Structures are given as structure tokens and as C-alpha cells.
Length: 122
Image (spheres, rainbow, N blue to C red):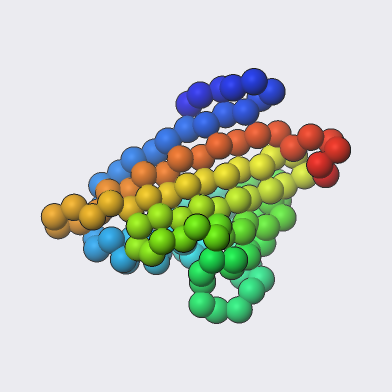
């Protein structure tokens, strides 16, 4: 994890997954699946109509707080990359995910940047 000025933090996670690239991408970009792999995600509600894609919005609840919405980014390039932004009253999280195709599976890289929300931004 990297900590920058003003309390900003960034970290990157990588994992190999024995599944096709398209399946990994489709599973990860739909926040409704996140409670299956993230124990901190307590509730997900889709706010926009199906299908999940660029501009899809979710209201999510994590552990101790509530993030108002998670917005899918507009830079989606299925089945390879996406961006997502989550914002609460105190924290903004921007994530970029990339799925790499490997023989017999996929590689997943997710980079997340966290920054406190300034009181003037609330």
C-alpha cells in the first residue's frame, strides 16, 4: 500500500483465476456478486436498469458505513478492463480492474485509490 499526501492511499491486488476472461469480467463488474467474495459488502441494490454496463449505478453498504453509490466507469472494454468509483460522506474509492487472458484461465489485477472527501465536497 502507498500513502500519499493528504491521507490518500493506493494498493494493488493480483490473482490468477481458473476461468475464462469473459466470465471473470462479467462476474466482477456486477456489484451484485461482490457479497459472494467480499465479506465487508453487506448489501447491494441496483439503481439502473439491466444489463450491467457503463453507467450502471448501485447503492451499496459496507461493514460500518454506507457508500452512497458505486458508479461503473465509462471506460469499459469488455472483457479486459473497467473502472468504478464509490463515494461516501467521508471516503472516495476509485478502482481500475484488468482481466488478462492466460492459457487455462485469467489473471486479475485491481488497483484501488482511496482519498478522504473534503468537507467542501460533501
